Image 1 (cartoon, rainbow, N blue to C red):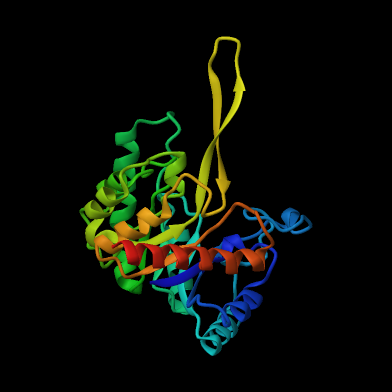
Image 2 (cartoon, rainbow, N blue to C red):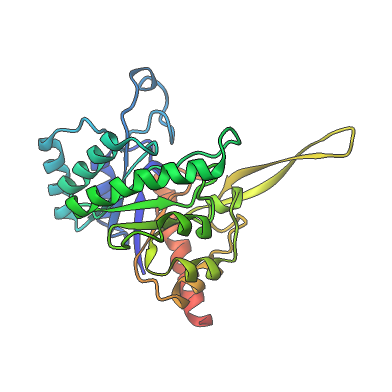
Length: 289
């Protein structure tokens, strides 16, 4: 099994520092957070989604791209993916991400999918997503970079089956699915193996993180507030040993990418801890298979 890391989980180090560190680990690829950091965020302490120092901005110059590529090549690290935060329908930003991925030598980007918040009918959102993906597929084919729909809560693709509905009419060489069981703790849980079997050739990548439901306030009428919090990989609701068994059962041989948001330990320590944990799970899954 091959291991990558998504730079969103290393907000307090730079891309160059991450590449240098990965050289001496069992990671062989990196997925880049791709976003502009607003000026007023830059004075804040580093954080996952605001002042993330390990982010490639869309405004990056060709020279800076080449410097990063050279460092990655020297370290034996594959530039696997560019992961922007795209809005479904924004073709201009989608093409910008595809262009950056092409220049970096990345093979995939994450594309936009509509948010579901009860304000618009699912079928309307689904049809608008298809209109967008129709155009995206042609751009992906042109740039030879695959577009990925991520299973993500609060969107119209929270589960494997709903992501499959979005992508099943497209060529899996151009459009695929980023399977994220950690997100499915929030919303969209399905039997892992069943979902993976359904995705078939559309299964393009897997993200590794975990989360857990926590009990909150109990109200006078007896109802209880519940919320989902990120958790260390080995301590959340996702049974990663089972997921790895199921990935093996369907013949998946791609990358699994670390995306731990639990903040349970310092960044560099978490990078090492996560891969060691998953490698242990892989070994235990191999013996159980």
